[in-house]
Length: 581
Ligand SMILES: Cc1cc2nc3c(=O)[nH]c(=O)nc-3n(C[C@H](O)[C@H](O)[C@H](O)COP(=O)(O)OP(=O)(O)OC[C@H]3O[C@@H](n4cnc5c(N)ncnc54)[C@H](O)[C@@H]3O)c2cc1C
Image (cartoon, rainbow, N blue to C red):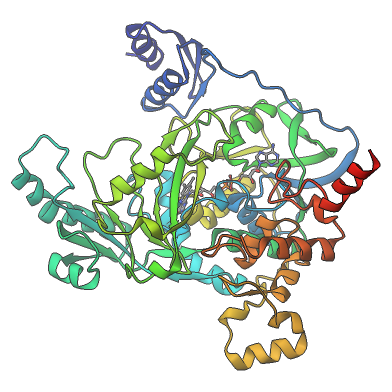
């Protein structure tokens, strides 16, 4: 049966009026369904069909919000060979890769800093690719990307470690399957580890089996119901924002122009080509456009008349534990549980570079592309799921939680290709996990696509692959610290007591190549406010330093973007106003 008929039949059986049509491998859905839930359900069904390269879901449902496009400005503010839309890890990695060539490149980012989308709200794991579906583009790029991290971290001076990952099977791994427990335990102990090893061998990932006794000796807090583990020693962890900032800074050094607080609102197309990218600050003439807009990639593609997919955000919430619990486990770990539903994405107890355990993430379809709330029910869900792995991990250890949105398309894989009908527009969409790990390989693929599409790419003789990070005082020896304090006394003044961050480091972050001008931007660069007290002590001090160094009035300092003002005004002003009345 033809794909369109199959999808229409699926809808009809449920009483929904859906018309499906295919053009150039893209399946377009029109009609109406009762709610967002069914909108996602049919989209997913359509996305699973053979040979469907993208699903554009235009179905209406009750309560669907009509979107208004922002007004753009008309003046020309730039001209570039390549305009990259989005300053997440994907956009910044592409910018850095393209900066090796003699090209004029502009990256536009609507937020006030780079790494403000999914890139700031993930688990920082540099996956090896073993957890991804075999044969997918995301797996291929993850395997390649993972291999490139070591070299990149040396060149760009961002933190990266191979801390390893335990994949653990327990007596609960098959408890939800309709099979007797002895059979479930047998499959968990003997079959699954071997399947994993076989896959690892195919992918060239070193992995080995660890027996229960050895596992519990090494990780005594793991559940006693554990049966076996498969260990992946090359699993990595990085800092997604320090990595992205490093990429952006190095790209700037090599001639890329980064325009922050610049939102793409439209595109001028003519004869199947984008001519200009329209932003809220003005227009940019472009020879090629790369869409790395994350959760908004489908909206951006629509602006270029190149919509070939619909993004349906999947929220992931994570709990963060105090560093005091950093020795609770030695390595990051995950539990395998079956049946693995289509949208199951492992998660686990993952260690950050600073040895905070991260527990999560959850997976939840959300309609609102800005919904990064963490609900009590999600926290309960995390504790309940991972108590199967670490049953006694104390709740009181949690110091923070966050949520990020995965930019999922209905076909689930990364969509990295030239637009079908717009000659100079490249999609880099559907970059959900492992987008961080895959980013270096994604950028290489984009270079290939640009070459293919006719852009002449001549390598620069003077490309500088190196970039130096700012000093981190807590990582220095006493002698080294003394020297820094002699140079500048501000390196001796601790502002964030939990993380040991000094005033000097905060000043460096403010005056960096991409200057930090709000509290969260400082936090991402220095860790000020990331400790146990979550900024209760240092926030006012950091705000004062930002104000002093940038000239922004203290009462205008924000936590992050627009609408996150920390202060309403000066208390004394309010008193004066009262007296005047
Ligand atoms: C909970 C969670 C955990 C994850 N864990 C991992 C992990 O451990 N390892 C891993 O490899 N991956 C992980 N991922 C996936 C990873 O975070 C993403 O794949 C990656 O960050 C995507 O980067 P990006 O640059 O494509 O998107 P983003 O970081 O979202 O960047 C897109 C940028 O585009 C900008 N933008 C959007 N629209 C416009 C516009 N109109 N004009 C200008 N700018 C615009 C946005 O402001 C944003 O900054 C996780 C994701 C989530 C949600």
